[in-house]
Image (cartoon, rainbow, N blue to C red):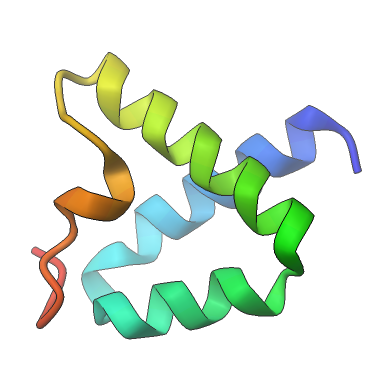
Length: 66
């Protein structure tokens, strides 16, 4: 899978985050397979850092995503 597709999937998760609980996103990432999951988490972390946030996965509220 090329990087453009991974970035597109990461952005798709960000767009949908208001619809998910943390466990749902974590589950969805897990279903992608470990290697792909790690790459998408890295992309999400990078996007959030560029936007002035900290780490994507650790910035999520575990009860709901705001």
